[in-house]
Figure 1 (cartoon, helix red, strand yellow):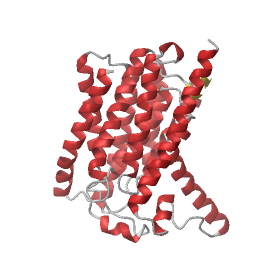
Figure 2: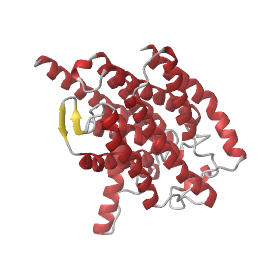
Figure 3: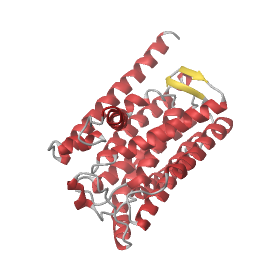
Length: 343
């Protein structure tokens, strides 16, 4: 428990104090965010705001994780695999952001290159992880409700989880603080889930050392997101960019697999799912009828164009995210109660 708290405390302090340094460095080097021409007109004023702020989240979380182990908590293969997925996806996002900045456009890596990078990370997770860690090779709902699959099926599933979760967080990162705040809430919930599995080792696939190590990772990321949010809240002084959104999405997928809550992620990350569905529906309806279902997708832009204030949308979406998380935690606990009753 102390290691979890220490990792979070260090990550929070580093994120709070380090993000202004990142802002100054990126501003001095002209790393300002290009704004899409087809976005809301109110966003044009945000052009030039420093981006790639996800580097502050990643660095703070990684250092927090490292410091937490100075107290003697065991470094496990599962914890390193989850953390490595987080860092690997951040690297893909960083390359995407860097190209945008260098070429002064809102498009970075092409889809093939980005998917290739994500496929490599998914492959390492799917083929290497189960061989050297306690990561289960299955498709899980929650707890012991899971279905074992072959290595190749697991790779395809992991690729879909990684790309889906990372793109979902990326789509949500369209308003100041929306993704960072929602991410802090979701990873806070996963800290509770991983720590619960540490305290109840007989009921879960993860052994205690693995579970607490995963809890340290997500606690550090939770705190790093909260510290970053201090500077990312509207009006944002820095954006997380794809560096942050792809890293957070990749970590969501990795932690969901590690904790056997893959399908439950639909509720725990409900806001991210809703944002993605709004884009899918917008495209499907437009291609079918030639008309738009929403004024603009993702759906947070729809409410902007309806005249809602940005802060109003953000807070209300945080509330929706919290409701999904509460439902997800409730189902997680209910499944555990059901299992305990039949022991």
